[in-house]
Image (tube, rainbow, N blue to C red; front, side):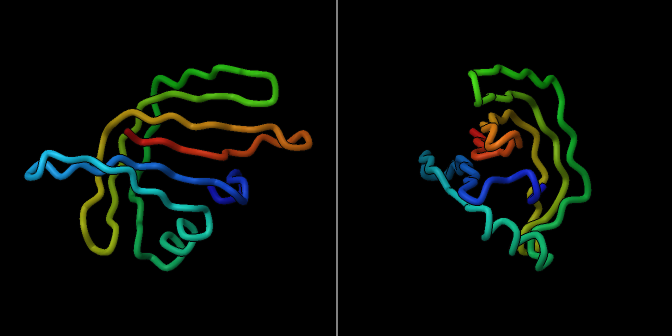
Length: 103
């Protein structure tokens, strides 16, 4: 995945505290994501993408879809199913992902 990420990539995840009934955006940049995965702190057993739709806008593309994943982060279960939006940019003939949003 890292080879598809632009250097300025950002992952944006909405975290909800059901007890407090509040939500907040949590961001992770490319370098931090790579450290999490390479260190083994974040592990994915499986990731499935479904119902992908691609919308082109000149040198940009928006990809929407559904995902299911099983995995752990710092020993805690991060298995989930949901929706996501990726933004891709064509830089010098190469498509790179610049942002992923998981609402």
